[in-house]
Length: 298
Image (tube, rainbow, N blue to C red; front, side, top):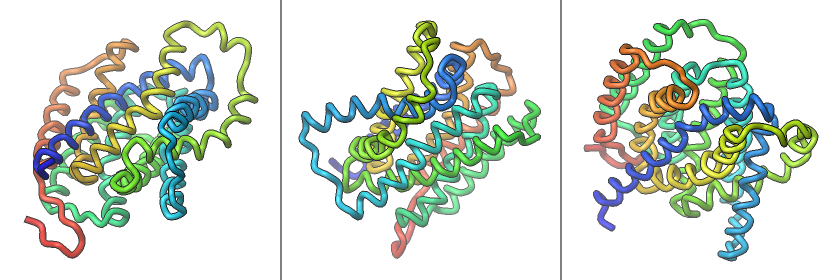
């Protein structure tokens, strides 16, 4: 596959991953009401591990190397433990739109960690686009009155940091291990430690949860926790971590859109204006040159 075609396909995979991730907070908001923070935050990994186990058995996957295992631990802590648990706790008290604007900081966190973990050096043009996108979502947050931080806000900011590190490490590792293998092995590493806390928080009342709550939980387990990461890590491996991370600027507005559809949260004209600005920053950023350390950027 030619380099240009490979990078375009990487951007497409990244977009698919972002669309799938955009349903995560709305699904979490629905599921946590009926199943609780621990079951939603950690139980999704236990369910996903069943699917991954079947795939591993059928494909007879080889164990990762000790070096790869160290990187997988970082991915597991961020994508399998930290982010699901922190966002589940935050979504128990915050609206989806609130969480969406704070998670918009993910591209900056991912690109920052990529500089150190993957050896990528974003250009000045890239950082300008990042600043434009970040300022846009900050303006949006201030307009909606989200300036005062709560404990749930701190949880979301912590979630941004751990997931940004996980994205960068996972995108780097995907180049040698394979995109879906990265999240699959991270799931298998984390799941055994989650079985007991999840089991202790299960109740018989959960069996009577409405169908939309079960659909939300299944979506979190199968798509948000596994399939979306397959597309996302594959996209970063093919298109470059820093460049593909720009697509994440679309995520908060897709989340708000899905929240309006599934949770009846409102969309204002101001939201649409900010969305246009953010899309512009994505277009600017995805075309920005990104160099490796030791090489010269265009």
